[in-house]
View 1 (cartoon, one colour):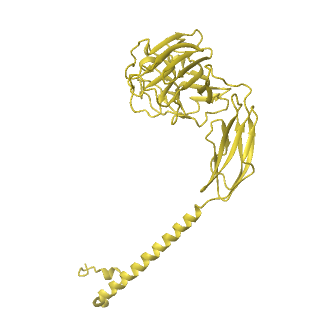
View 2 (tube, rainbow, N blue to C red; view 1 turned 90 degrees about the horizontal axis):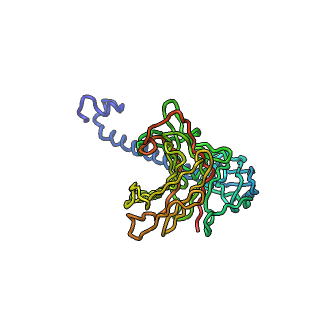
View 3 (cartoon, rainbow, N blue to C red; view 1 turned 180 degrees about the horizontal axis):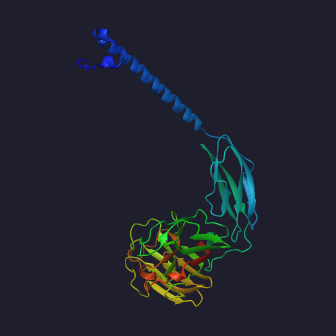
Length: 383
């Protein structure tokens, strides 16, 4: 308000004697403000142009674009040079590359692969710098032990023999608190002490960490899974009342349970030692206890020795096996999704729970902790 006792002109340093020219002065100020705003805008545009230039494609030079390994595996190196800092990574679980984080403009990357027990395999390492990417192809010779499917007509499409010292990128951890499902008492966490890979096996450890029960629940290829095939794992079960180990599968595009299905290849509870159970879940059959949907078998040394648990899955049936012997066959009766939601991709799961509606059905024995579910391998075959 120019008529106020504290005028805008006084605030902007205009002498009182020039108040008669206040409209002229205001015009000058407005012009100056406009020029200043344009200058700021041009400066901002200049900075944006600099950013765009900075994000342009980089030049990446590799000492080798292929690395070839024998079946025994081993370690090789490659020199990488870029006009900007770069990162290196692989989406293939059997390839380990270090370092992975941005490492400057020039560095030596180390590539390690474990022993190959199956067919010849090929993977890639991606070098990423700015807007540019280059690939290093990694190949490994066929293994001395050719992994074949127990059922004729299937070929190996994915496996983890746990021959490295850590889980590969195909595995993801569930992270959930106690009580999340089935009234179970463990916390699912991502920590080295609950999922350890050493001496050729995966150990899922159920432990009491200062009063907090911790364990691991692991998903293989959660985002893609597989539709149909033969899926098998070799597992040594944990001991102790309250333990609840499982090897099972859930649908990739899960919406509701049990409508979208669940496939329990193997479950066991510690209060019923050496008894393993195979079960399917769907809308029509869900914990009904019938011979159509579930079956069990006693194995005298399931907690001290490894045994194989597998499932052949086609569009017509699912057959469950223990050590190669048929345990249960569930057939597609053609009535629709309520009885057969098993025509979509599912992914394998390994977990070890504590207590819950089934595992804790006859109480808990905390003295058995820590308890371990040990897995020798997980394999997926398809026709």
